[in-house]
Image (cartoon, rainbow, N blue to C red; front, side, top):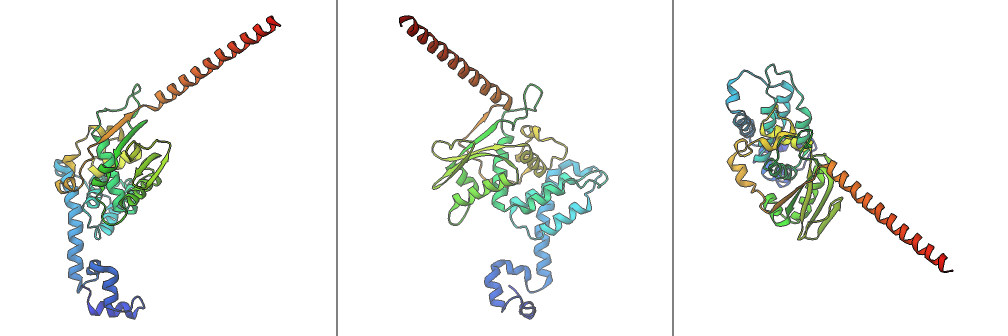
Length: 308
């Protein structure tokens, strides 16, 4: 727990009243302001070590090839990583660290993704992982001219029960927290804004109909897929190759065990081009129907004039 000397120092700085108040405020996190710097260094090293282990596991045999990580990338990982205790968050940082490794260490292009992950609560990371883990298992291949990218027109439907089991949110109102996570992924553009959510008393939709029996309908996208591939440590793969990767080999067994895959999941993949064509076909049918009705009306009018 927190030392008396540190508590006195904080009190003298006008931060808090006493050691007891600090312990009540911070709880076990107060250990980071512990009895001496050795405890803080030890705990930080353990957290960073978990991230480095994840990075090494994702790189695999590529570790034997010459390479280095840009210092700016390393700084962001170390600064944030010292305080990361959630294992999935460690996987995210470890994967991006592995993805940042290049021949000359000059590439710092992954900084936006690191900053994005730094800004995401654990619940948001968990939902992002669950969604794109499902996408990676879909039976689609790389996009071509004839077959647009798989996330275009793709929707996933996850039942409410499966979503609650996958997210494993403790405390009150898990449905509210999951809904906030959905909104968070939309705000960060990691999924498309069209969705439907209905679990318990919480329901909201935008461009999609809520599934029968409740659950989540969501549209994955290129940005979300790209982040997921970076988390897996795949530096050179484009997002459309997400269904070609092996997820389980890049994620620790403990994380895989902690995040059970949703079972009752359905997907719909109607390319946008096809949707537009279908819409045009519907419009043409309506126009033809109106023409028939107009012709019929004209015929009746002509018959009325003849009788008159």
